[in-house]
Image 1 (cartoon, rainbow, N blue to C red):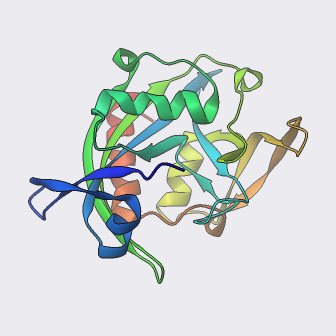
Image 2 (cartoon, rainbow, N blue to C red):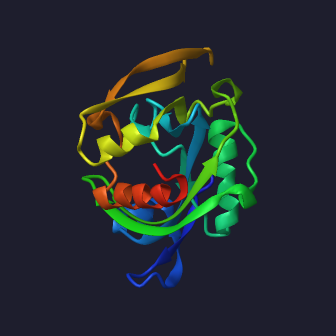
Length: 208
């Protein structure tokens, strides 16, 4: 497998060179990522979408996460990040149809790696039905949505769980419907200020 190189940055977000993905996480260099949150509206309710990470993933297997996300490689621009949506979810999206929420820097230190991201965060208002997604099984094992107002309550610690609906794929690639409660510990534990920033920006757009 060809080694991936990422742009690296200093504490002031100044580009200082390139390094392999493994070294970036080993040494804790700041690097760029692409985050895209899908939203939709049904019968007066706004919904937020989450991917379920594959059980094969080294980091955070089986947990709910950003709808589509990934690293920007050294030769890529932010616009190239749209490939993450197409690769992981199997739907084509025009970059011009994304709403930018800006760059959110945040870092997480775990025993086996240091993740310092300059996350270029976007929102996409999807018209696709849940049947319209084809998941990249080695990366994503399911796709679910929850009422945005409920997600906000969970992120702010006002409730312990939320109800979600969607599907997971089995080993044959068949879609198995999901309609169940998910708890806070079922989600990737991004920093609280990251979630609060997302809430703030979505509130300005969707007025929930």
